[in-house]
Length: 189
Ligand code: ADP
Image (cartoon, rainbow, N blue to C red):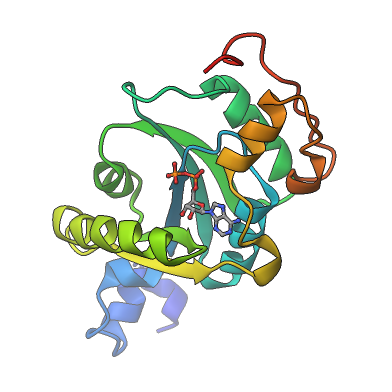
């Protein structure tokens, strides 16, 4: 009898022919990481982090966290559009947004990893607690941290916003071809 005569899906075949210790789900499961953030706006620091993390995961979901009690300089739609433009040529990067808990969002889309960047000790102090909480409430979600490259560790969306609000040129910190005009509203915040 030829294998093709057995009418089983491939994953069942693997199960039958000796791979019974590997959960069938694991044979098809892809490694998805969520890179959550405000991206208000995206900077070359964010882009560098995603590019360096791509070899570690099958897919990276760059997800804008929407916190209704937080004030942003740029509207959500604008931030999403910039992210989509920047990662347009990378099929393994998708862009999305979510409300409420990051861990719930990860579970909803089947992501078992979070990606975050560390620039300095205060990033570490803050991120440590958040990652421990996400591990508990997210049923084992692991946060993978990448230390920022020396050339990027001074870059933050906060600094970029200040430059833009002050009418300066933020282009050295922005992804190529991304021109960001100061928003009409929000300049006095
Ligand atoms: P949040 O409001 O959640 O901090 P941000 O958009 O400011 O969102 O940052 C998202 C993530 O990107 C954070 O983990 C932050 O540490 C990381 N990050 C931001 N800028 C850099 C950078 N220059 N180098 C490395 N990581 C960075």
